[in-house]
Image (cartoon, rainbow, N blue to C red):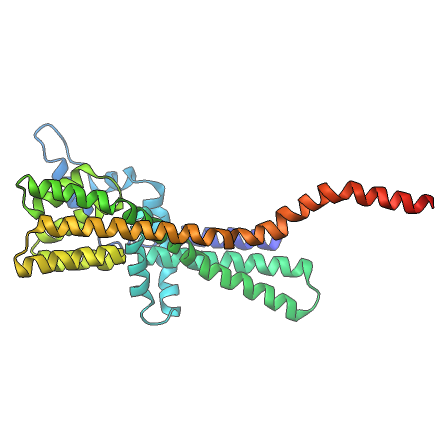
Length: 311
């Protein structure tokens, strides 16, 4: 126990020392500084100096994130080629929780690997006597440390996709109402960003921002479909692209898409309901039936045993 605690304290101390001793590598610091200056360029306000603005930031921004980036530099060197791109895409599909980047996430994976490997080593010294069992336990902890952050991120991706899939029909209905009221498709998307809250609104907002900086609507919507990675959104984007190419009314295309998405969602619900009896079979057999048999047959078995003893 003392060895594990000492190792955790050493890793945390090294992370803090590295974060305090090294300059930040965040390329967004300049943009953040410019935005802060733009917000404070009033006649009756005074701009803060760079050290003062940095001191106003949270402990995580000043210490934890730079330390994670320094740790991530080691993890990036050890990871295979293409891992950074895959991690970046995973974070984008998860909605960038905590606004962490690839380097921070790599640092989290490295810390998780070290902590769980040390925990596996400590547990192996308690429960195992032979070397093979100890190695297996340590390897299990190390593998769990590497896979747990990815698994947690995949859970976030699934939850975000579920929210988008749930709100997509209502979002398309709002687009239909806006287009039929005389708004253009871009203005209708802006109305969705204004009225709807959640991941679908964030993705429409990103697409609008990309279109404002010069990206075409088709390219921005295709990139949005890649970020979300949902079949319904991909079909929706393809229908919008075809309506632009063929000159079909966008309102009619959106109405068809809304109806087809609702039909597909109903079919998915029916499919999930049809799977419930099979999924409930194992809990019934192994958890509920034994308790029922114990309650119903237990008194009878006790009476029979007492009768045999008296004979």
